[in-house]
Each structure stands twice: as C-alpha cells, then as structure tokens.
Image (tube, rainbow, N blue to C red; front, side, top):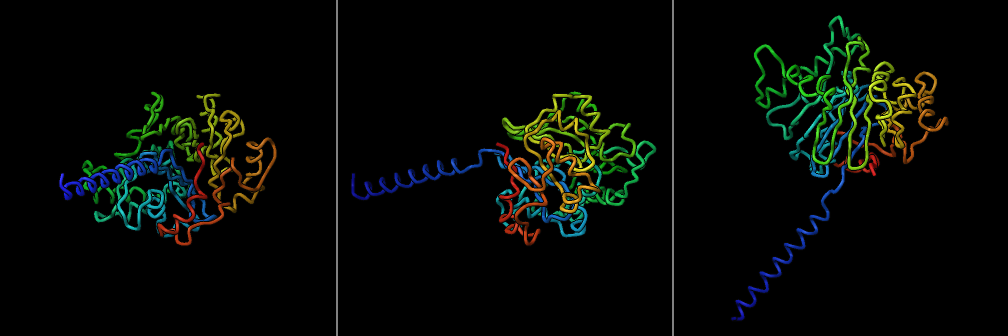
Amino acid sequence: MTANRWFRSIVTGVILLTALCCAAMSSCLKQKTTEMYMVAPEPDSLMESYIIKTAGGKLIVIDGGIAGQGKEALPYIKAALRAVAGKREGEYFEVEAWFLSHAHNDHFNELGKVLREYTADDNFVINNFYFDFPPYETPGFPYSTGDSADLEKLREGFGRYAEARGIDVPEGGSYYDMLNGALVNRETIAAGQEIVIDELRFEMLQTWDISDESDVNSSSLVFRMHAGGTTVMFLHDLGARGGQRLLDTYGDRLKSDVVHMAHHGQSGVREDVYRAVDAEKHLWTTPIWVWRDTVRYRIGETRMWVNGGVDYDTADGNNFVACLYPGYPSDPTSVEAWRKVLPAMRVNLD
C-alpha cells in the first residue's frame, strides 16, 4: 500500500468513526419521554393551555385559550409551540392534534385568533382537530353565557384555515361543522374510543349530553392521557352535573395519577369526583385573582378536598399552579422569551 493510499484509508476511517460517534451521541440526546407544559403567558388571565411534546417530537395542544387581559393580545401560542419544539422564530412546525374541551372563550379563543389570521404563507400546520360542541343556540342548548360572538369568530377562523390550506368543504357547509363531533362524540366514546399519538394514549371518557341544557361547563370533553405508567385526568371545566354523570358511569375506574382541577379549581365537580380520581398531583390552571379569593370562588374549599382537609396557598411538587410560576415570558410572542420560562412550566410526569 502506498503512503497516499495509507493516508486516505486512515482519513476515511476517522471520518466514519466520527460519524458513528455523532450518531450515537445524537441518539443518546434524543428525547426519551413525554414533555408536558401547563403554559401561561402571565398570571392574571383566565385560561387553560397545555402543550405536550411526544417522545417522537409531535406537538399536541389542549385548549390553549385565554380570556381576560390576554383576550385581545397578539397570539402567544405559536411562539410557545416553537419553543417547546426547539424551533427558531418563524421556523416551520406542525401540531399533530389540537383538542378543544368546550365552547367557552377562555379555552378556544387563542385557536380562534390563530386561525383567523392564517394565510397560505404561514409556516405551520395543524393536522387534526378534536372537539364535540353541542348544537348551541337551539332550544336544547340556548347558550346564554355571552361567548356566542367569540364562538362565531372561531367558526370564521376554521373557514379561513380551510380556505388557506385548500381543504374542500361541501357547498353550503362549513369546516367547523365538518370537524365538530366527527371523530369524538357520544357514540364513539361509548364504544371506548382512544386516540393514540406516538407513546400517548388519550382515552375519551365523556362528552355533552342533552341533559346539560345551558350548562356549557358540563359539556366539557373529558379524557384521560396515558403516558407510560402515568395517567392524567383532564376534567376541564366540568360542572357538578357533568361530574355526577362521570362518577355514575365510571366510579372507581376514574383513579388517575394526575388531575386537571375542574373549572380552574373553583365551582367545578364535587368532592366525591376528586375522591374517585384520587390523584397525587393536581394541575391548577388558575388566575391569581381566583387563587386568592377563597370567599367568592370557594377555591380554598377545593384545595382542602385534595389536601387532606387543609388549605394552602403555595405551589409544591404535587400542586402545579399557573399563577404562581417564578416568571412569565417578557414578550409572549417571542420564542426566546418562552424558552427561558418553560422549564418552570413543565409538569413532571414521573
């Protein structure tokens, strides 16, 4: 072997060894578990928003909505999603699934804003929408909560998104109507419907019933997420009536490791539902003005239900409180600002 051939052979071997080491290191650095964030751009607005990143890198949003002082603000969630995904400002991303729990604007308003401003040039897509809203503004569901104007804006947003994405909608119909209840509804839930995304399994448990009448909160879509050996029960804004339906149907089978506290922790389901769920960790998507007002919102009573009869006003390893984070993004539309605060918003699922 000539000196030149010998040298080229050595160089080639070094390159191959380096490539193998880099691949092994990259494999070790890859995300191995589910990441779940209970996000809030500030502590004062009423909202429920979760961003979940699967071990395979897929993004899932639950509600995302914001009302109060954040209602008319510029959309925050695109920046938050890019930060969770490890993307830069403006970089392309996909949301694999967007769940909407029910038709109150502190839950759907952010999606409405995002969809209404969507254009064919936007650098993201949403692959699947899951929601089942009752037929509001009918005798069965009069919908007198004051959010009907915002719900109409959400419908408009779905239309805008379908047009920009070139999605075919039947003449005289709407994209909202095509999606609403198409995959998640009473019949599919009764048949034991599950939605599987990578390592996650979403067990659909309950949706609206005609007996809810104008109780929009009790029409909340209830589901349980299975992430490895951990289960997370999402009660959303479920009220006493819907909570009783849930308890009558499942009883002790509601047992879960983590629970999203119903209706931001105030005036939601009754204590017996929490006893059946019997969760060790509690997720409070609660604004500061609700958290501090134990008289008007009776949130102290709810805190006692899940804390052995003792009230508390701080967050700890078993109580994640959205209004008590150590910091919030200085600019909610900035990816970098979100990247700095996300670690404190991550829910430990171990």
